[in-house]
Image (cartoon, rainbow, N blue to C red):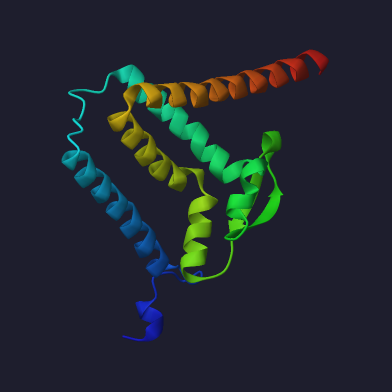
Length: 163
């Protein structure tokens, strides 16, 4: 096989080693959390009610957007991404930069879908250890999500009335 046939992506170099490092970090963090929780006697909930799943899901949505799209969190992304353009509703669109692990982290931090898995992992860990605190945190993030939707509805309604 030629080196060209061994390439994963014909469009450019995909940072597979960086992806592997990130996936390993996530798996290791999950494993450490599970082992420490077990050692400390943390008990998993018997069930997760549907409203908690909805609350966790809405909070995951908002937190991942905050981390990947908000102007105010640009300082977290800046070492790994560059600003491409302004997005809708005060959001920004960043593109990953560099190569290897730096690019892999940049791709993670510029993709709300990718970041959502990490956010959900953190919120679920909080839910297991401190369900009341996790619900409060999730309720706050969900309230911001609802407020965003109301802002969009208001803007849309306002434009229809003026137009």
